[in-house]
Amino acid sequence: MPRIGKQAVKGTITLALPLIALAIVAEFFLPAALARLATLYLIYLTAVVGMQIYSGNSGIISFGHAGFMALGAYGSSLLTIQPAVMSTSLPNLPIWLAEISGGQPLMIGMVGALLVVGIVAALFGLPLSRLGGAAASIATLGFLVIVHVTLVASADITRGSQTFFGVPRGVSTFTALLMALIAVAVARIYRDTRGGLSLRAAREDEIAARASGVNVARQRFLAWVLGGLVSGAAGVLLAHFLGAFSPKDFYFNLTFLLMSMLILGGISTVSGAVGGTALIVVMVDLLRRLEGGVDVFGLQVPQVFGLTDIGVGLVILAVMYRLRDGLFGLREVDERLFPELVVIAAPPAQTEVSDQATLTIERVGRRFAGLVALENVSFAVRPGLVTGLIGPNGAGKSTLINAISGVVPPSSGRVLLNGTNTALVPVQEVPIRGLGRTFQNIRLFRNLTVLENVTVAADAVAGPGDDSRAAAMAALAVVGMQELASRAASSLPYGAQRRLEIARALALRPSFLLLDEPAAGMNPAETDALITVLRQIRADHRVGLLVVEHDLKLIMRLCDHIVVLNKGQLIAEGTPEEIRANPAVIEAYIGKRRAAA
Ligand code: ADP
Ligand code: MG
Image 1: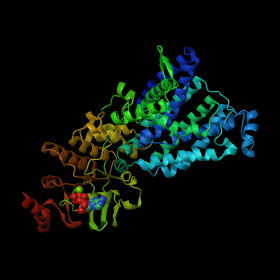
Image 2 (image 1 turned 180 degrees about the vertical axis):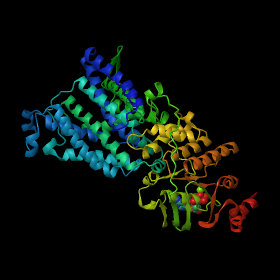
Image 3 (image 1 turned 60 degrees about the horizontal axis):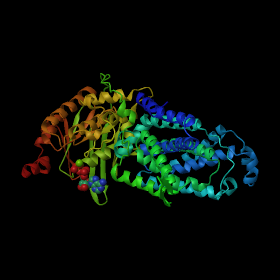
Image 4 (image 1 turned 180 degrees about the horizontal axis):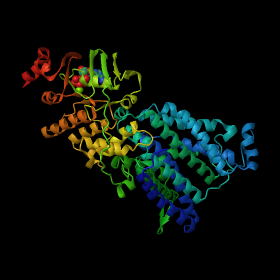
C-alpha cells in the first residue's frame, strides 16, 4: 500500500477543482466547438500527466509516451470497432484476434489496451531503467520509432499507414474528466510515495541516492510502467474521441506537442502539467485559426503556413532560455498555498548499535589505470568508537571511503560489513545493511527540502508501518536542524549542508558512519558544534564512526583511534598519543605541514 500523504490529498483536490469546474462549464454553457476543445484538453492532460510521472520524477525527458498512446488507441479500438466495419476494413485479421475483436464496450477496450501497454512497458522498461540521462532519452525515442514502425508494418491488424476508422465515438466530457482526475490523483500521490520521492532524489544526485539506499533502476522502472499506463489510457480516449486515426497521429508531432505542454508548465510538477497543457491547447487553437487566415476588424490576415508548429517551437525555446523549471517551478501549487506544517516531535527512543557489529577492511587495494591509490590496507572500525583517518592530500582517504561503501569497489582485498563482502551486494544494499556515509564534495538532493532529503534515507530502511517522516525529524534533531525542515536543501549555508548530509546518513540507522572531511569549510564555532554532535552520536547510538579530516586538532580532540594513510599505504595505527609520537607519521604528514607553515 503506497503512502498517501495529507499533502498529496490536498494537492489532488486543488488540481481537481478547476478541472471539474471546466468540465461542467464546457458541458452546460459552452458552444459545441469549445466543449470539444475542453474534452480534448482533458485527454491531452491525461497523456501529459503520464509523461510527467516518468520524466518529472526521474528527470529523464521521454520521447516515448506518444507511443504508449498509440498502443492504447490501437489496442482498444480493435476491441471496440463496429463489427460491420471490421469485416471490410480488416479482412486479414488473424482468426484468434477476429474472435475477440469488435463490438466490445469501451470499458473492455480500456482494460485490454492497458494490459497490452503494461506488458510492452514492462518489457521495454527492463533495459531502459538501467540507463539514465541522455542515453535513456534516446532509448525512449527508439521506443517511439519501434512502436510506430511496428504499427505501420502490421497492416493486417492496423491497416498500416492507412486510416483506422469505424471506432465508436463514446467519449463525453465527463468520461475525459474522470480519466484526467484519476491521472492527476495517481501522479500527485505517486510523487510523495516512497518510490516517487526516492526517484526525485535520484534525479538530483544518483550517487547520493544509491548511498541512501535507493534502488534507482527499480524506481525508474515503476515510474515508466505507471506513466505508460496513464498515457496509454489517454490514447484509448483519444481514439474513441476522434473515431479515426493513423500511426502518424501518434508520432513526432504529437510527441512535440506533449513535450511543449509539459515543459511550459514545468516538468517537475503535476500542477505544471495541468497549467502547461491548458496554455498550449489554447495557444494551438488560436494559432490554427490564424494559420488559416482571418479577418481582424476588417484587416485581412493572410494564411501563414506552419504558424502553429513555429509557435509551439518558440514556446519551448523561450522556456528553455528563460524559465528552466517552467511556469510552475519545482514545487506543487498545494505545497506553496497550503504547506503541511512540519511537526517538531520529540525524537523517538534511541536505538543503539550492537557491540557485535563489525566493519573490517582486509588487504584492500585500488588501482586507477596505472595509479595505485590504495595498497594492502587493513584495519577495523569498531562500534561506539571514533576512528580517525588521516593522511596528506592524495593519500587515498576518499578512495578508501568509496571502497568501503561500495561506490568504487576495491580492485583487491575485501571489506566485510557484519561478515558480508560489500563488493558482492548492490551498492544501494550497503547503506541498508548498516553503513551510512557523507561525501567530501557535498552531495545533497538540492531541489528537495531538508526533510525530504532525510526522509529518502529513512524510507530506505523503514518497515511497512513505520513513519519515515518522524524518523527523519529525529535524525534532524540530532544535528539540530529541525527548524529548517521545510527549507530547500540548496538554500542552506555551507555548514548546515554538511550537517544535513550527516542527518541523512543517520536516518539509515547505520551501525557505521563514514564522514569524508565533515568539517571542511566550517568556521571554528561550527567545528565545535560538529564535534559535540559526533560525540553525541558515538555516546547515544554507539555508532562506529570513521572520520576523514585534515584538521589535526579536531582529530586529536575527537578520535579514540587513528589510522594514517600515506601514498595509498597504511603507515601507522594507534591512539592519538601514539600517533602524535610516531616518527613515520611526523615525517609523512605532520612534518610536511609544519614545514609548510
Ligand atoms: P585523498 O582523499 O586522501 O585526498 P583520494 O582518495 O581522493 O585522496 O585520491 C587518491 C589518489 O587516487 C589520487 O592520486 C587521486 O588522483 C586518485 N584518484 C582518486 N579517484 C580517482 C578516479 N576516479 N580516477 C583516477 N584517479 C583517481
Ligand atoms: Mg579526499
